[in-house]
Length: 491
Image (tube, rainbow, N blue to C red; front, side, top):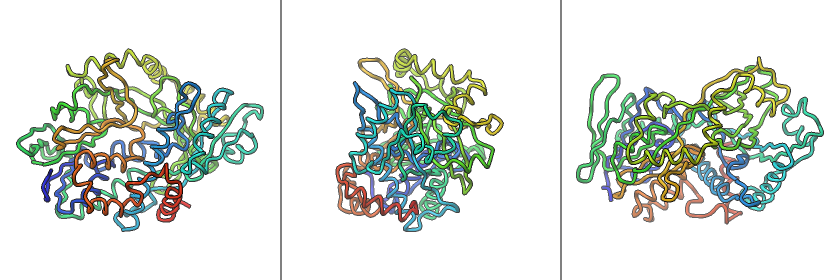
């Protein structure tokens, strides 16, 4: 157990470290926090608004969260993700209500979340999904339609030029959201910087770790002054996005052995025609291509970025050996060590479809990308769209006794045996479920403290539903949702 005045190091100035930092300052007011960021600004990588889809991932529209297994739609993951996003909204509502965050524009906006499919087989799947999800209060507002005119009322832009006899179907949730994760991250870190015992060091790159007695020595380089420093911390959290894997390897903790990473980059088509942008108001998700990673589910999105409305379509997957958008092309080769080379090779053999998919994506022409957009928006004009590069994600590859190595989608927390270090690996749904993920970090790393009355009281103050199920308790779910909708002004 750490002391009452612990030194805590947070690595990476993204939404994960920011969230954990705010939680810790509430639960351990005397904690001394130091945040290291290799770039010269916070929220510049995965949390940056242009480096992610901005979807408040609540499983309302993301079909990859509800796989079809033996003819039955598995909704278990969708339920967990939806509940996790409701928890995030409660935390953000608390920050707003207490004036702990201050952004020039709303960091969260209401926007319809819709799933869009075509073809008999996909329509059958969407119907099954709708029936399964809408039986739970957390999804009870979901609407389904395969009526052309009804769908045209919902998404008129996407129906222009479309054959009325085409078999299509849509589900719609009015309480979806668009989130500027960069804005909320910057605001949380600005809040933390108000404390005298919180230090945010930008342009500081962590180079090595060394464990001594009950503390970690964190060796960092001040990139601006070309100066090396060593700082001690009783607890270290590695929340560096794609950069977490190399840092985990440098820590040398046995729990990190057998993990590898496969980097996937993303690109979007951004609409440049203001008239077109104003004629679409929804996040519309389709089905992912066979073998594609979750971040590659196609979607046509209305975005609100720093008060300005945008329209994006994608993502188109790409490949780079970088683990971060601002990383090095040597990231992937340098991450390969004896402990993870077999899991990496085995996962590659088991994911030939993914390899084929990425090759196809990388070799696409502008016309190929535009042709895929036209499946969503038939009347699109190629001159109205430009290609932009989004963020870099690293999919987890994990050692597996039976298969040698498996590609894991989602996030995973790696904790040292003595609970003095935690690292977060993985991507989607990531930022949307950041609060639940950081609560899991606290549960695993501070198991005794989190059971105390003081911690429970503080957590329930920030997250009213803490310790209760929003899936099983429908009344609580609806009450909580009404509360966050009012505070965050989402109605």
